[in-house]
Image (cartoon, rainbow, N blue to C red):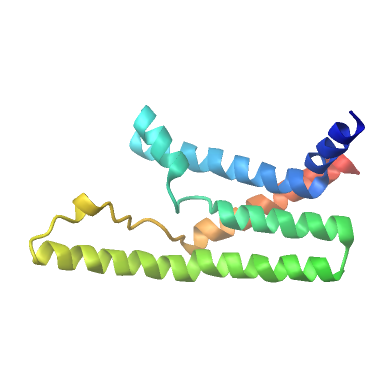
Length: 154
């Protein structure tokens, strides 16, 4: 029985709760934005929850919350720098690489239309990247959540 409660401690620490709260809150906000723009329906709800891209960037929110909560927990140690480094990679990916995939998908769809193929048949998503505003909002949201969770633990 003691190992069960020890296992629960893993889920009740500041770093884990900050990251999970950032994912949850950013996804709820993303769903709200999508539903506000496209209307309230079960299809829109499922699509908003499962889609990539959109406001705010969940990836940016979770890595910024993770970075700040690791700093609060560990201060300036090797693990803090490792988490920061990985966070920059994730944020760069959200801005750059995924945005390029969007551009290439749009070009592929245009070529398919010109050659008489139906691009809708292949479910090529052109919404996989993030704008600077979406990433910035995600980072700010993650930092605010990390501070809020930290204040619960202090």
